Length: 262
Image (cartoon, rainbow, N blue to C red; front, side, top):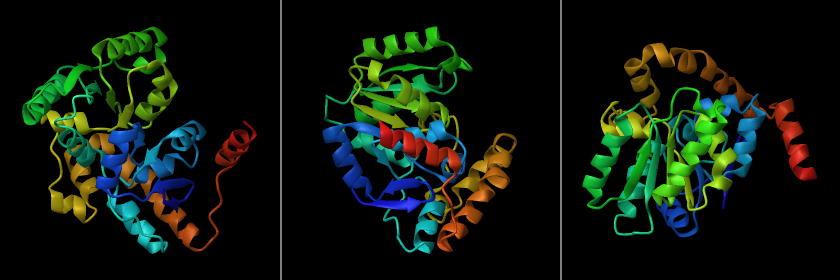
């Protein structure tokens, strides 16, 4: 697969149709890079390891797509998790090998998403759901209960909406224990969107790269620091890459060395 290098991440240059075909036939672990991810990758070696292990890394952000054009190696299509997930379950409407488990969101929300998705598809494609408690990832006993619940459900697809990078790290840590799961999707706030609990930005807003602004206005207390402080660093880093002065962070270099030795 062709990749586009953005900072210390390699993003697969696929269309949504190509991704749907590949993921459905071969399975794999999908993550959807955005600006916030790429900023976190500069200092979070554990998150970078998730990136290195993921099967597919596709562009979740119009801003990343703009950056790829600026760098001279364009990403062909933006494939956000919240757009891809409904495309995925509609694509597999009649594929009874696809059975989805929704993990994440507040109590009651994934059940609403389950009901709405199954109604759209016309069958029980979402077979079970679970809303984990706060900080569940720190409780090994709780993680094992979740694993047992997923395994008992008969699901072949795990769609995790736990927030990033928690969802990606949790999947990588426990995917080997999820024996029936062939497809792992890290989908962020998508469960909330599917349930109708949070509004999606209008399509035209997303297509011009302003979905971040829509979300900021919708949840200012939660998102102002991410969008207006932390993520601003991304633009300076991309300029460094354009000028060929960007340096891979030390944590990433160490990780690459360890990976090459194993």
